[in-house]
Length: 124
Image (cartoon, rainbow, N blue to C red):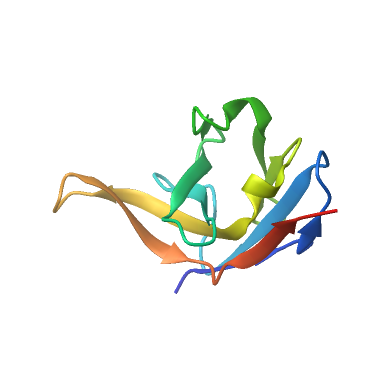
């Protein structure tokens, strides 16, 4: 059973960098062909994809956040990290890490394991 756990500060000041870590247990982040994602949900809004890092280490970011986003990993600790720079109150959200993989039954990607989510508030 794969488990994901987010960690990081719950309060970040405007213009600073938000940094969150997802620790994975029960499976390796280098296992073919899974992707390790960051997804957020602002208050009163739907889920928003932030970016991911693949089993290979390659990254993909949401075009709307790409200029401020960096995702990296530490394979020795089985962790991956989100950094979002120059945050504003609009970045306030519950941030989730999740695993995705290709499902041959539907011929598409699905999210199969999620962390519980962590609230991040951007405020001075």
